[in-house]
Amino acid sequence: MALNISIVPASTKAGKETIAALLNSPSKPFIHAIYRDPSKAPAEFTTHSNFKATTGDVSTGTGLDFTGSDAVFYVPPPTYDGTDLGEFATQAANNVKKALQDATTVNKLLLFSSMGAQYDHGIGILRINHISDTILKDAVPEVLIVKPGYFQENWVHAFQTIQADPPLLYSPLTPVDHKIPMVSLVDVGEACAQALLDEDKKTSPHFFDLYGPQHYSATDVQLAVEEVTGKKVEIAAVPKDQLAGFFAEQVPAAYVQDFVEMTTSALPGGTMAGDFGDHEHTVKGKVELVDALRKLYSAQ
Ligand SMILES: NC(=O)c1ccc[n+]([C@@H]2O[C@H](COP(=O)([O-])OP(=O)(O)OC[C@H]3O[C@@H](n4cnc5c(N)ncnc54)[C@H](OP(=O)(O)O)[C@@H]3O)[C@@H](O)[C@H]2O)c1
Image (cartoon, rainbow, N blue to C red; front, side):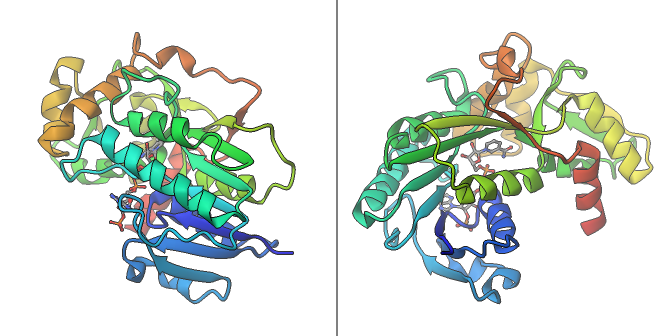
């Protein structure tokens, strides 16, 4: 029988890619997508007969009705409204836990986490994942916790900054040849859909890393951007002591230090920098960085 799968919040990047992969799956699961604003559900989903969107918010707990769901996919969202990240993540995870237990039908939770989330300090904004993992790791009989690398698609900002003269690629990743795990959202969607549909029950909680086919550095990003755009690009490396100024232009002041700490934790000598090797629970995606960037560039 086709599975009933709930996804919350469905508007997250990982949620959206996973719904797309599930709707393409031959096993034809029924998808219950929970949005703060269901009118944001894309037309390619709402026109599908196996898809329904409802209203719900993990931060207040309203609308989190998983009744009838066999499996739930939770992607802890970040917040930028001034709320403390730890308090926000704790409240949201507890709301999801209560909804899972109230539903009584949910046998599997797929929890979106991150590389580095095993640390309880020194990882900046990723503490939302450490907290969510801790609260939810035994919420239902089978809990799968996926720990992806940095999304390759985050580099989309390069397509704006290379319009400057000279064309620049801003990189908080230094030194420029330091490689870290990066994974395409396409592989994220495929791997999460597969984990939700998999009938083999894992010993719970089951943690797995999700990386791309190889790790990448700022220099690899530069080469990929050059290949895709046909332009010569210079790297504007942001040294560690200038990261705060760099992020202050992108996120509200209350979260700048969290972004600095998350970034430095992946740089040489950082909290998680020694953890990027493969192990028996590492899943490798197929999409190379250059192909993820080519897809974004041609969609512009
Ligand atoms: N980005 C990466 O490279 C990366 C890598 C590894 C792991 N992760 C993890 O992926 C998760 C998502 O992170 P992301 O930065 O990529 O975010 P994101 O997927 O862009 O998700 C943010 C979205 O969550 C939705 N949301 C729903 N309820 C919310 C609420 N109560 N408060 C705030 N937002 C809410 C918002 O959509 P609406 O406004 O439409 O409601 C918002 O746009 C995090 O747990 C992160 O640690 C991210």
